[in-house]
Image 1 (cartoon, rainbow, N blue to C red):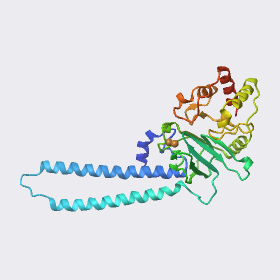
Image 2 (spheres, helix red, strand yellow):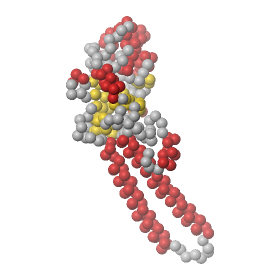
Image 3 (cartoon, rainbow, N blue to C red):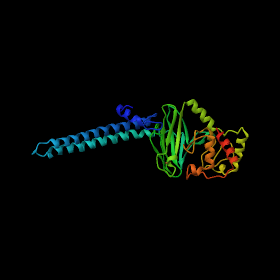
Image 4 (spheres, rainbow, N blue to C red):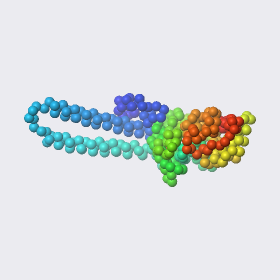
Length: 326
Ligand code: CUA
């Protein structure tokens, strides 16, 4: 917060978990400074305009009768105002251009994570030179703290926009086109993000979490996630695995290490390790997993998860299996 500490103090009332005014990364900081700059300049212009208007009204009221009109000096004031407006707008435009390139730094570097936006969830592919170590996950992006992470942004269906306000600006995901974004978290934490381009009925339920963690924690997470799914230890979960493979679940979802290899829905290999389900819809508990399977269309109308008829016993088994996929 280099610019206008007064504005920062005033605007900090709006800061929260997900906020552009609580920057924890260089691009977010550039944009936050831009917001403060715009606020300060617009604030000064507002005060000046109101001041001149008040002066004009007061002067008119107290003008002695028969005072000559002041058109000539007004002409000079108007010309001055036009020039000042041009200068201010040019300055703010230049400041915007200066801040924007910071969204995608290091374009020459290969991206490390492929982000694919779809109605209405986020697919993350962690790319590794060794194809056996490349893996997919959904809606929860883990990154190491204190370093640039290059994302390649793509969309499957319609235009989405990747926005984690505390870490970077918005970048669109456009079908048939590749965009890039550099994420950089200055400190460890969990940052909420949200699709920022209207993309259909459940646009508002297209959230994500970015977990920025210390490099050693990140390496541990990568290692765990790139491995196959856990083998269920207890009998209810083992029965749930059989139900999953028997029902249409396996046709749409992948669980690495099993025969489930569908690619329509999110990869569920380590779904139990995520903190939310349904792209930020609900906290990830065994109960919410069961609720989701039982009635996905009431919880998130229009999403691609069909209602799969299951008995209450199968539901208990499925939820035990899936919440155990850590
Ligand atoms: Cu995706 Cu809005």
